[in-house]
Length: 79
Image (tube, rainbow, N blue to C red; front, side, top):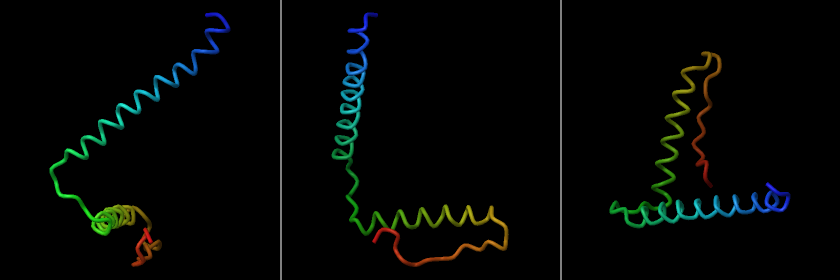
């Protein structure tokens, strides 16, 4: 490969990767738009994420020594 070809190879690779990512993202967005399930409000989505995080924290607390009790915070993480 000539130095000129080598200097153009990386931008072309980046362009191809960008195009592939854009096609993937467009498909993901279209799938979300076509999803027949009802939409969630921000509050519903954040409450679901809070519950998921709390569940993971409970499981990880089991793995810790008894002296390291988790401190429960009731403040929302997302505000």
